[in-house]
Image 1 (tube, rainbow, N blue to C red):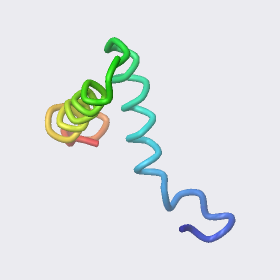
Image 2 (cartoon, rainbow, N blue to C red; image 1 turned 90 degrees about the horizontal axis):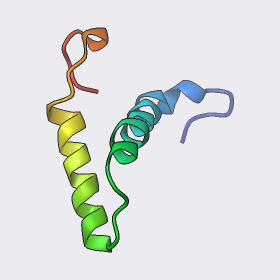
Image 3 (tube, rainbow, N blue to C red; image 1 turned 120 degrees about the horizontal axis):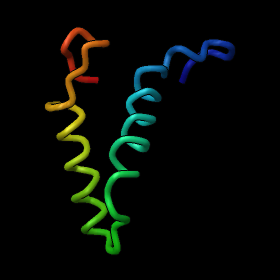
Length: 62
């Protein structure tokens, strides 16, 4: 946990979560079962950690 008044400790994870929700979950149909949800999340994690390169991050993944 970060100290009170230090919001930047968790900024990298918050940024990743924001991109995951807005760029991955919004572009895929809502999962109907728990297994579909797990598969969708795992595919999203794979995409954002290994394939989503950005010029803003000097070609690195989030």
